[in-house]
Image (spheres, helix red, strand yellow):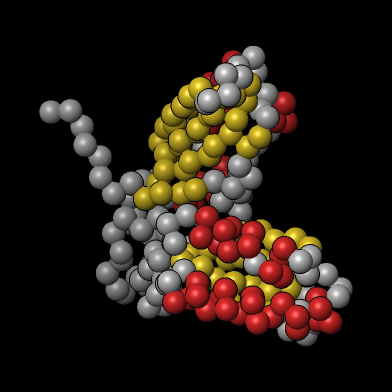
Length: 221
């Protein structure tokens, strides 16, 4: 998958970056040699940010770069964030989608002819509050999803963590297409939908979800 790392820089970025640029560039080129960084550069006219394109199996490849980048650690970057980028055209696209007159890539999450898509979201709660979230999800969220065209079902998972009062929650929902997911989540399909009642029962949660193509399902014989 491809991930975009966005940098929002401070007003003194241009005047300060010279002293850190050599170290930053060495780090960037090493990431490129490892096959992680595809392309990177500062935005122009005005120089108010930068954009770095990464390739990997999770956003961690971009996040780990940012947390140790001298531009970030020395305060030149005032805010950074990572977004998954669904690339569908071009020879290096992660999920290529061909036009109608070509053979579609079967199973691509962005393809109208694709297979089922799994949407995964993670959160944490306390032992006392977990039941409140479970109640909210099973009595309000899941019943509402049934009314959305293209919804194929959901799972709510939980597990105890090393902290005896911490519970991890995972919501897995199944959808026929990204179009169906956007009926639920809106234009920014990879942004988590967390209602106020759910937020009140959680200690933390992912702001963004991950989408997976279901390529095979094995049932009991």
